[in-house]
Length: 106
Image 1 (cartoon, rainbow, N blue to C red):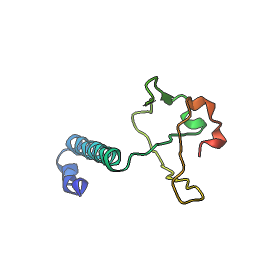
Image 2: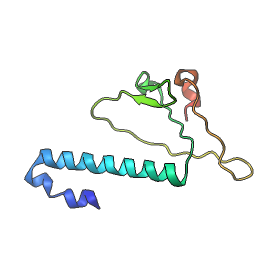
Image 3: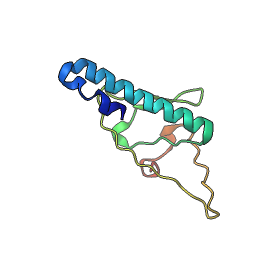
Image 4: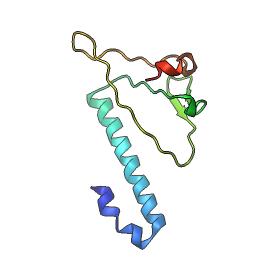
């Protein structure tokens, strides 16, 4: 909805349009992250193949640092692994992303 509201900026000033769209994307990401943290804390597994080698790094504090190019096309593969009893299985992030083979990064 907010991106639709900002669409006329494309014809008024392209710099304003792109800045507004970036702001809406940031706001959406922050909102969903906060909502997940509050109402549904979960372990997130981040993986990639050879094309992102060296661009996803674990930090010492348990976080993740990305060094992607300025413009990027990212296709997300949303997967949930469920155990036999119907509960979501624990999907822990490996201590080092280098420890996971490309085939196991799905």
